[in-house]
Length: 434
Ligand code: HAM
Image 1 (cartoon, rainbow, N blue to C red):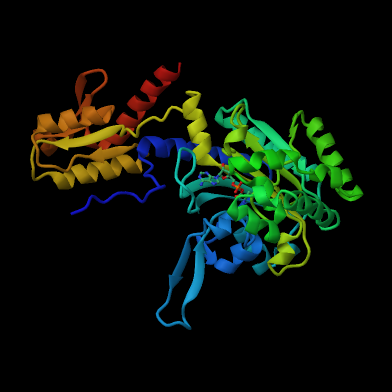
Image 2 (tube, rainbow, N blue to C red):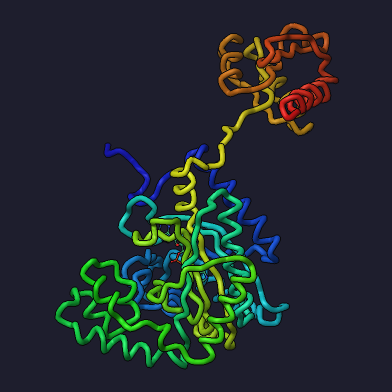
């Protein structure tokens, strides 16, 4: 039988790695709530149109990387869905569907969860990966743009990545982008023969996407291309200047990056990405985001501005491991293991464990029929502090309590057990902290 393995580009988060992720997710949630965000969850799959319309048909994310799902028996029942490659389109779909424009504005929502892209797997690039996402819908900025970027920087700082830089750009709006795209298309058309095959086709659909090309042959052409910064209209320029002034106000020094266009079609004006020093060229952003003032309307709502970011938690965890700053993951340890000499006393072991857990202690009964010595070895291997031994004294209402750390043993009245152990454990922890 062929070996069964997790699909390529996915991985199991075993308890040690899962503990790091849980810590990152907790930090993300606590921080976002302190900034006034409310948690939201959307389905892991949506009608494909949400992504085709929202993210854009000519983007890598939709064109090449969408996990499409088909279900239903007959042709008429068959629906076209896709696993969510990113959360923004789904959250905006929910904003429109639930009429959130009547809520107090702006609506600030946060989501942390798995995303799916059929990417070429490599370090930091997976087919299932986790994002910490925030969205602010209903504020035209630019002050909120700076606050959003500041939140991302606060997250990196809080988890222990202190050297993250933010790259920012303005990619214009419906007033100035068309003329820029014309200029860009003219530039690439003048070099049509040098364009690799897929870029030739894209030139006709979305010339902006060419700036995002990872193909090495494209890099000199991209470097020589006209920049949007030279083509911004007055409103976009004022918005960009406002963003920079507010970033300065919160002591963030961005790097201006005129070729930063982001890989998704919904962006307008502010665009940004987060990198560690030296990683800028490797297409391995820790996170990215920007303003999407046309997206709500594109998905069927009233014109409403929005901005947000997504941070890749897998890449954050990798970066922490690289700089040896992964939050120390304590393996789970029970405080108490309940063991018994008599193979038939499992009811009592279960009762005692239930009672101890009711008193707030982490407790795991050994329900096996193995010898008492083996059960005690097992408790020590788990790193338990105490073993409660059910033996002959049970008849008189007593158990033996073995302190596995101190190597001492004493008899305790069963009616007193939970209080006794809770006190002993608290005293021990107090000693550790002191
Ligand atoms: P994105 O730049 O496509 O933006 O993804 C955000 C982050 O997710 C990336 O910077 C990266 O850290 C991580 N990421 C993306 N693809 C992968 C992958 N295959 N493996 C591991 N990590 C990955 C968005 O998704 C937008 N929705 C962000 C946004 C929110 N814009 C406005 N609001």
